[in-house]
Amino acid sequence: MANKGQQPPYLHLAELTASQFLDIWKHFDADGNGYIEGKELENFFSQLEIARRGAGVDPSNAAFKEKMTEFMHKFDENKDGRIEMSELAQILPTEENFLLCFRQFVGSSTEFMTAWRKYDTDRSGFIEANELKGFLSDLLKKANRHYDDQKLQEYTQTILKMFDLNGDGKLGLSEMARLLPVQENFLLKFQGVRLTAEQFNAIFAYYDKDGNGYIDEQELDALLKDLYEKNNKDVDSKSLTGYKQSIMALSDGGKLYRTELEIVLCREPML
Image 1 (tube, helix red, strand yellow):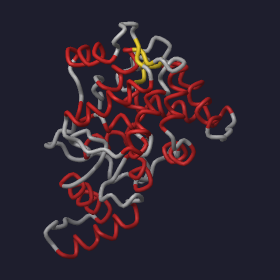
Image 2 (image 1 turned 60 degrees about the vertical axis):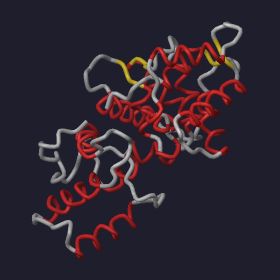
Image 3 (image 1 turned 90 degrees about the vertical axis):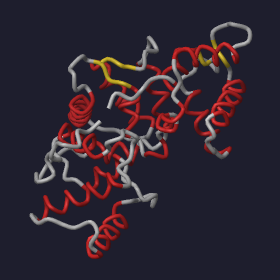
Image 4 (image 1 turned 90 degrees about the horizontal axis):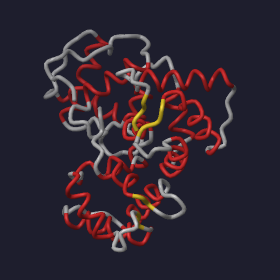
């Protein structure tokens, strides 16, 4: 979460590295919900205007609100009144264009999760940095995009700079899923219904009635419906089907083991 006392970093630069881009994202997405919205959005636009024009602006001024409306009309592609990470990549001058490439060609969370499962062999919710190149290569092939080795190496280094900030050689699922457009990032949908380990154990035991350590697609469907109803969250059947498909991409032949489901329902994003 951003330190609200800090000055926003790097907005004045003509070109941003991947890690500088991520610093800006973390600063303005202060609550870590995957969007720059509300006061965060007003603050971002205000600071962007100052960085680009070198002059202060008054958010209560009608001219400011008009400029912000024009700005959102240009960059808020899905017209939800918020800025997501992939939209921010089109606003700021990044030296690496991987974010835009990723968004254009890997639009499905199911593709993302299927590729992820191949490399997260111990089901920890992380893949090793040395496996990242293979993961990205598989992902781009699924999207029918083929790049030479030099370009793939460039993308790999970009992702490492963005997400392996502590240098431990591990990349988290919840962090990398933020590269997806928000409407495809199903992990964000569960931020409001995160479970404690005790809650998760009780729920999994209830749906895994035979105690074999996994649940199937029908049981997952019932679990998700109950989870949303319990948390008083409205979700339409189409969205629920999409979330279910994305989660089942983590399964082993239709068997969703507790470790996979735990990543989705319990793992807090590290950003």
